[in-house]
Amino acid sequence: MSLSPRARAAASKLKTFSADDVQSISEMIKHEVNHATDLVAERARQAEARIRQLTEHAGDDLGRFNRTATQRIREHPLQSSLLALGLGLAIGMLLATARRQA
Image (cartoon, rainbow, N blue to C red; front, side, top):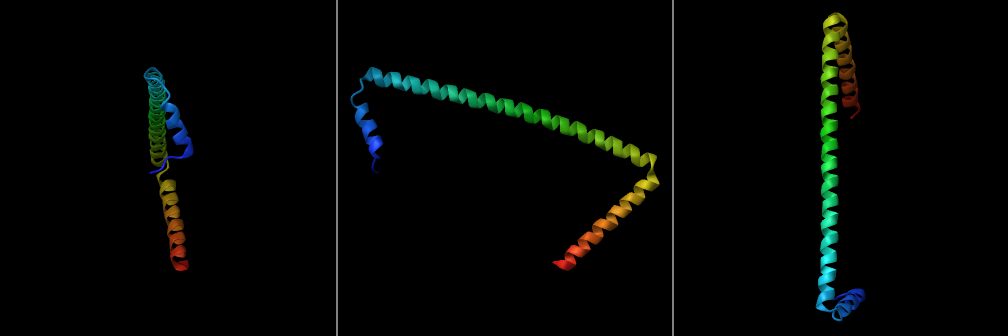
């Protein structure tokens, strides 16, 4: 494998560094990598917390919708049954039409 001209120049320059220079650069790189890792971990924790919050809200909304729908059906059983029948017929007709066209 051949090094690019820039990589060769960097490797050549590294040969002129003292052990202290290399150690100092190594410590700086280690610090930056640790800092970046900490930032990514914090962002992941924030995203996880936000997702949990959204999931809880969605569950609450779904439960509220379910209770409301159940209440309306109990208050108006005939209208609910007719609406369900009408929607079922409409969906059935749409599916039958789509099958004939396919």
